[in-house]
Amino acid sequence: MDELAAADAVHVVNGVVAVAYPFSGTPTPHRVELHGLPAVYAMCAIDALGLPAMTGRDGRITSADPHDGTPIEITASGGTWSWTPSSAVVAAGRATDCGTGCGSFEVMCPHTAFHASAESARAYLATHGNLDAQILGQDTAIEYGRLNFGTLLTDPA
Image (tube, rainbow, N blue to C red; front, side, top):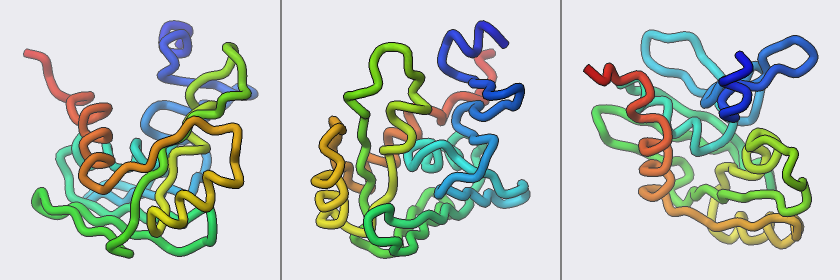
């Protein structure tokens, strides 16, 4: 457990596993329902997008725009992704005021979220000046999720 914590892969808070990337031990805005598996919560939008690739399963991600609460739904089916609203994007942010002692679950995860549109993401970021952030289009966000988690369960043999 110490090695996983040192690698920023697992975090225990008050004796409870709070983070085991890409999963959250507590509810987050990013709920992932993969076919044939129980619903789970992802730490952030990119983590949620990585779960279908990691498990090789189709599924549905639900979230809400942190700026205005607009519901967001992403489905993966047979390698095709569908986003509602169709204008949805991901704002990938990193807090700049946390210092060096913070894990990514504190610095990045709370600030990497789905937004209903690029305009909504820009409005959100404008009110959060302590973030170094970029707005990712759908294909780029999906690719980041795949790159981060797509081979996590792959047998190297």
